Figure 1 (cartoon, helix red, strand yellow):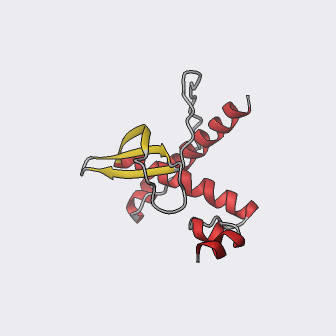
Figure 2: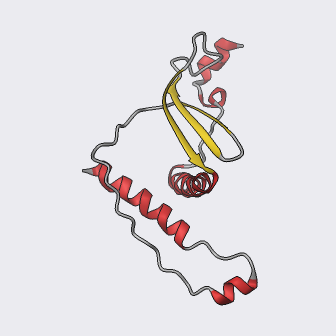
Length: 133
């Protein structure tokens, strides 16, 4: 039940971010009435949840390909190939909306819990860092 509510809130935030985007030109601002946030209904009963700690983005001029997988060796270079378990293909418009939704979610998380350090070498325990030197 908690998962459904969190998914709905992310979708609502994404829809709100999309629906409240402001026009760039002054003429467009004058002609466009203010938009109300839109609630989008989502059916996720058939969705499969998979954990990933690896992501690769590739693409073409028309679309982005986002691969997700599990890296069993998060420190250093993996000895074995990382198995891609999920591949999502999106157009650049959807990618830009996804980027905005992710930025908003990460900013909210960091405002509550502090800045997220993405360099794993800076996050590992001090004793482990000394052993690696």
